[in-house]
Amino acid sequence: MTSENAAAGEPQPAGMGEFSRIVGVFFEPAKTFADIAERHRWIAPMLLMKLASMSVTTAISQRIGWERAWRHRMDIDPGLRKMTPEHRDQTLATQVQWASVAGYARAMVVAPIIDVVFAAVLLGIAGAIMAFGIRFKQVFAVVCYGGLPGVISAIFTVVVIFLKNPGDVDIQNPLAFNAGAFMDPYTSWKFVHALAGALDLFTIWTILLIATGLKAAAGKELTFKGALVAVAVPWAIYVLLKFSI
Image 1 (cartoon, rainbow, N blue to C red):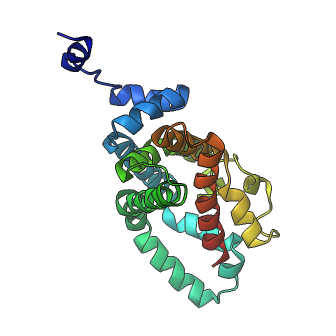
Image 2: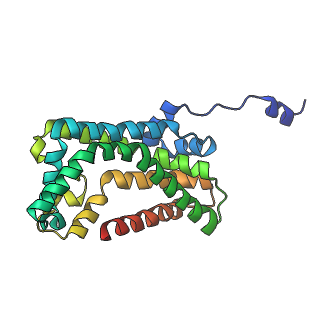
């Protein structure tokens, strides 16, 4: 038997388990994303993200209450402050009625759709424009695992919600890990304040992880700098469109 036949007959390594992957994303991202690119499973990180998001929604419902949360938002939003008292009350009643449903819907439906769209955009950039041979399943798995810093953010958010006075929690920006947390929401330009709040520690962490995964999926031909640009540009366009409308 030749060495090639012997190698072909040997069992292939099973790869990393899901727990090892989840831990490895934070401590050994290059090695972990190489395994993810080769064995593109994505159920575990998506389930974790759903649970984390629903935990935040539940904490807001039980500890703060949606009426208090929305009153706070209406007080600091320049556009909402301009409403007539009757319009404010009507808007508040509608938001409170549907807030929990909307929160769980974002976790169960909206967030996965956003991941699918973002993965498709990255595939188009890296696969078509940059001409790297990668598959959608690879990119989608990278996006799912790259979003795991959101789980850490959700844990911190739940802790803050239960430690702080409920009236002092800003559900739009509960953690002071971005420049927006240090700006006055009453006097700052809304667009600048929202943009400063969007670029936080966990967002930067996620962008870097997804870029690491995209490079692992594309191979040596794609540099980390190129992968970082491919991830950061569509994210920046999305944020600008979101807060300029």
